[in-house]
Amino acid sequence: MIRTFVLLLFFVSIAYGKVFKNTDIVDLKSAITEIRLKDGKLYVSVELGKIYVLDLEEKKVLNVIELPEIENYFGEKLKPKVFSIDICRNGNIIAVVEGFDGTRELKFITVNDGRIHTIIPGKRRISMTKVRFVDKNNVVVATTGDEILLISLDDKKIHYRKSVGMSTFSDMEINEDKTLVAVGDESGDVHIADVKTGDLVKDLTGINVDRLFNVDFRNGRVASGGRDRRVAVYDLETGKGKRFDGQFLVFGLGLSPSAKYLAYLYNDKNDVAVVNVDTGSRVDMLTGHKYTVSVILFLDENSLIVGCDDGKLFFWRR
Image (tube, rainbow, N blue to C red; front, top):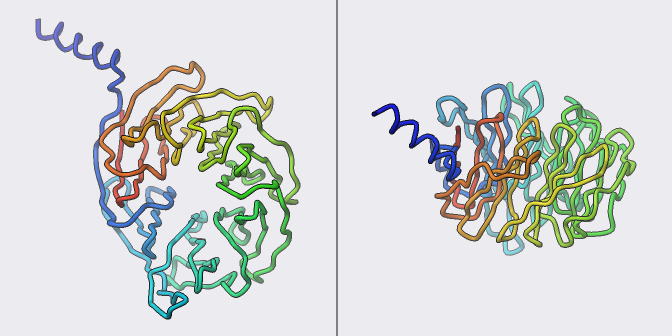
């Protein structure tokens, strides 16, 4: 009798999509801007000038990197917003950080001594927004002007600066082998560019018709979501896409490592839909986020992290 009841509960939970469980919540007290995973550690940047390093298993803060304060136009001291971070395989950190008087700076943080080096200062007036490591000495940077730049860290040289689109930049992600980047912009299109040369390879179009907010790039698939409340998942090889609809602006999304699963901000209640890309079916609806979801990162096929504007990280597992 008990076994029958347990089985009944199991099948009811599947029928109603209750697959993922919220296992932990970590509060970092400031809006989450980016989450990166490296060797069992989470690197989380926030708006108020900090990069947190957390132990993934214990969910404990191991280190906090504080960026130097900046001055605004009125001479007031402020904590700089951290727009984007990435982690090299040796543990070094690259970051796009707010500079003086509304400028942006590219900072390089060495893991062995914690020193912060300025690669691109604010006085160069390059409106950087997103950054990704290509290798230990080179990074690719995207600007608000829909450009990508390849920059060397040792000599601070810009090898190229090329436009990939004609609109305002939204988001960028690099593929696993660091050869291609996907760039989303205000047009709703996703531009695929060669990292080595900066040349445009192809455009992925046909589903999003308004400004994009987020893109992800995993296992030969590219996901994009934005103002039109649509999420597109494109096959890079064929250019064909699948459409998934939401009820709110898609400020956050993420693909699983295999790109079989997609998670995205679904509605104005800050619920996150998890869907099977191959079948188009919904796997679950993750609820309980009180503030806008800005970052979603799959750790593997069965777990993901949702970062919100109130500074909370929600850990979900099935």
